[in-house]
Image 1 (cartoon, rainbow, N blue to C red):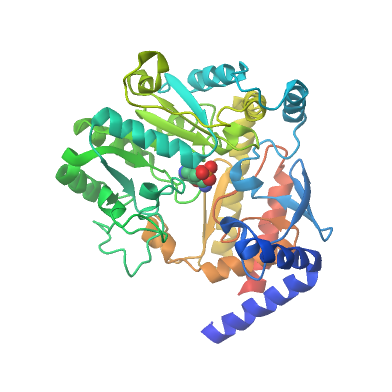
Image 2 (image 1 turned 45 degrees about the horizontal axis):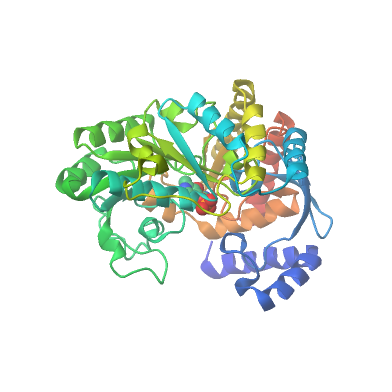
Length: 446
Ligand code: PMP
């Protein structure tokens, strides 16, 4: 389709969205007066994001009274669905005792034990309040342990919003340089001008280039941090295993970012990849719907934070780290995430991508669906999406139109259709409904 025709189509889909969502528009306009852009960065999309009223199980209701099947699940966090009774009860029980008591309450140790029980590479774990903090503390630990400062990360890898990890998380293609030796490009303004020189940027899915770059730079590297792009551009098992081998060969710490974790197996992503990283970051699901980050790994590294061992020069705390409400919700959530629960989620994950890919093939739509367990993405692209560059070249305007069209059908995904996820109460019939709705929405958006 010609550019003007697609712009007209986008405008007409946005117009009907406006008509259907007057209350959300009104609330957004009001919010813009006191908040930059009316909403946090990830919520905004044109013409304005919805305001939700409530959620229950796998459903959400917005302020205009529309009901949605929730395929976003709050950035993948609500794996049990909204207001799961076991989580509500655990939170209420803790609220009855007090929300924050200025001391440990015991549940944090239950949580750490549970994580160490599930994940063999975890000897010790600490909590914080976001994935951003988890990767920040791990990188500090890696630097403190190795006494080297530069880090290696992947182009398009996301690890939160502290400076060093926002290098090359979303490089503009005209600045990204060579595909096999990408430039290190700050992804947001306001970062220290020196920060790009602290980062070696590696390409995903390309063993030869990664080996070459690590061989050149290993002497300066504190660690390699790896976001396997779960459910977005899922990295191959062989690639993860290769990374584990190459980091061992060059005596480098490997940090696995599992913040989109516990979405496909009892032992998290490293069980799926069959690797043991030195350090791992967690977030999202682990907080049971409340703010969380967690990080852990080898005892000899984590013990740099052991306050009994004064003089390590390392420290981690935070007013609300391991706060009782998050711990209660997270522990209740993990208890519900049994192997059977993952079996259900993984079966539906397979159903959604197989169904969507069959639909795209039958209709000749240049699109592909990918998943890691219950997290999935739809890329509108002719070429196979295997790394940052191929993902960046996909048709974002088409994804936006399909997203809006799906809202009108009662399906709440993510704008961009990247990192969608469903919850445990979701059933096969819901997935079939979604696949049919994607079929109608793609037609409307084309
Ligand atoms: N790492 C990964 C892989 C993530 O997906 C995210 C969040 N989407 C983060 C880190 C940052 O987590 P948070 O938003 O809790 O800071």
